[in-house]
Amino acid sequence: MSIRVALVGAGAHGHSHASAMNNLGMNGVDIKYELVVDENPSRAAILAAEFKIPHSGDLGLLSSFSGDGVDICTPTHTHLEIAEICVNLGLPVLIDKPLSQSFHDADLIINIFKNAKVPLQIGYSTRFDPLLSRLKQSISDGVIGIPGLVTINHLQGYSWANGWSAWQQNGKKSGGRIIHFGIHDLDFACWVMESRPVSVRTIASKKIDQAITSWTSYSAQILFESGALALVTGIWDAIPTNYWRKTCSVIGSTGTIQYDSAEDEISLNSQNTEPVGYLASIINELKHWSECLVGNTEPIVTIEQARMSLALAVAAQNSAENHGATVEIEEILHG
Image (cartoon, rainbow, N blue to C red; front, side, top):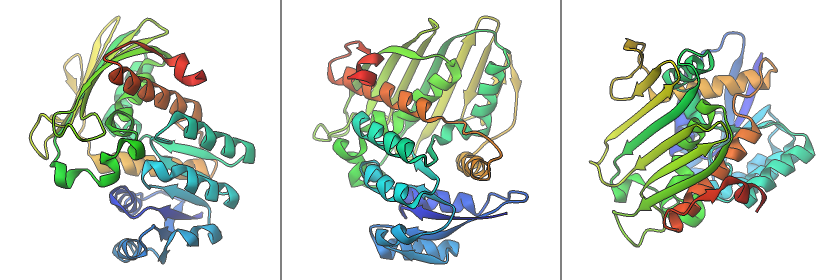
């Protein structure tokens, strides 16, 4: 079976998706990018040449695309505009997280797809990390009993001048670090606990440059309906440039399970498993989307889950802006 997809966005994340697409290796399904478009046609042409994508150009070409799906890898603040174009095409869409930088616009996107009955998926690649997905499956299988506490620490050093693009530095465009990057870990906490978040308290700081309109470190305490708790921390400024490490620990009623990116392993009562890499999560995410496109499976990330994760991230951001005040998730969902 042949599937032809348009890639929207030739920046860093579009490049990651193009690289992953070249490594899918799916039996019985030949999925390829047929077109890459970008607001900068020259950048689209460079990406097309590198990955042998037949056609490229500016965003105007998207409105006449007649393939099988669209993969949106553009800055967050552009998602609504591009989503409206894709709905008119009637093609299934994969949008990289977060769905939008604002909860209001996220609901607009959800509703236009729902009303048009066009399939929409939101990309949370962390769920497709081989080890983290195995950690989640172990918890779902009851290996550690009933989960009561998940602790996630995400440490990532950046050169401020070279590591973050201008739109990522602008909180109005990206939503800020909590919404743009922290949402991966907030979503994973919800997915692991399999429970609805009730409230969140967040403290945050800006150590790199006080003029930046985005928090650069945060720590969130989350209460779930089940009574379980999550402690999620992201630090992007107080550590060496190019350093990256993520740890995740889940304590259950009968055991614990841990993940450490530095060790490339998970441990369950001291029993280790296999290594993992970042590209693998993107490859697995695109494989899963391909299987959804041909009707072989249901999305792992539902629209409802993506909406809830964004609500949690927005609530965490609001809490940080109000000096750690508790924010009820319902206030975001229905506010």
